[in-house]
Image 1 (cartoon, chains in turn blue, cyan):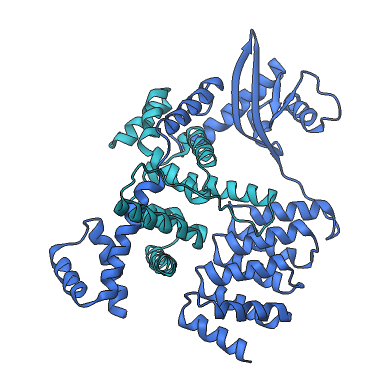
Image 2: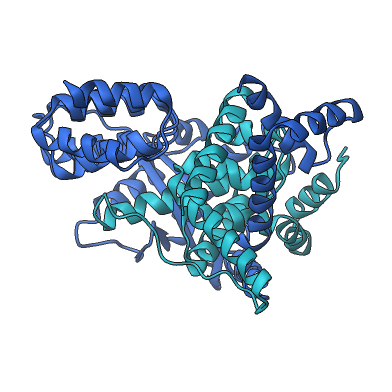
Length: 310
Length: 181
């Protein structure tokens, strides 16, 4: 079987014609003697031909997508590709652009924040825009803009008339607060942090901090993290946190998803352990799973059997 | 100095040529669409994801530093966009509801053997749903888009060895599912 594992990659390479003559000869000799690998090769063919149709889409649909993209770019007058080459020039170019944008805000006084259109003199408690306006008037030098606590990004500008510009952009601001663990804002921020794709470290920390939080959306975020986070440490921590709570139906189903689909053996074994030591419902689910004869690795089957027997 | 066709097209796009960006989109639209289909089986949703991907790529084009190929960079954006789509959907729907609308493969073939083949392909496509998102993406990129292992490893942010193992396990799992039906 070890040999067969080795030939798996060669079968795939053969399909892509990446295999040299010597390895081809060796592979064909193996295929002649091994029915399982012959079947595997046929399955590779099925898989490849399924790919021919997987991406099939009505003729013209992708052309229409391209057209919509170009229309959208034209309508926003393409602010972004103003810099010829990235990396080195980006921070300077970006800062200059922000400065220019701040000046434009002062001079023109018509802009939008997010999807919200805002008039010249925002009213109705639009504190964010008012704060930005105050900042824009106070900032006299480039350094003032750079030191601003508000971070402006994703900027698009277009002309809307004589002497007027419409602007859309995202605003982020660094905030430090201290609140009780059950505060709705704490829950909200934790959910955002658990879902934050930019940093594994912050997701891991947020998942750990969610341990003592009893809240539906936080539990849902933990469940999502356990099932879908790209990083194993985060998925595992989420599973551990969920395991310490009373196991709801949703979490039980999530654990079964882990058992069936997670790429990490550790995660699958942990899911079995949590289900086996949880309420009787979890053990019944494991028994049912064992009886369905789903294909599982020997280690998983062994662990399942040991729990079910005990 | 730009060396590849992509680099030339990118440079011209950055200089303001939307025609060149159109060509760039054409070159990789099928790759982006296939990745999108890995996250949703609805054609309309997949096309919406494609649109978002190309808009985001355009807006971030000046940050493309050429450390990977443009295709790899674009597929990474598509992966992130697909993940966001699933996340937004999971916020709207109960956590245990998975996006499993029935997909009809488009064929106009009525001969029996072709029907059997189509049925087999359908089983394989359906079987993709047993894989988690990362594994499904790896299979789509490797087997449907012929992407090299090293590029898939960059997109999945893991080593080539892990990518190979993931593909091995995924194909075995898919095969078991298809054969069981």
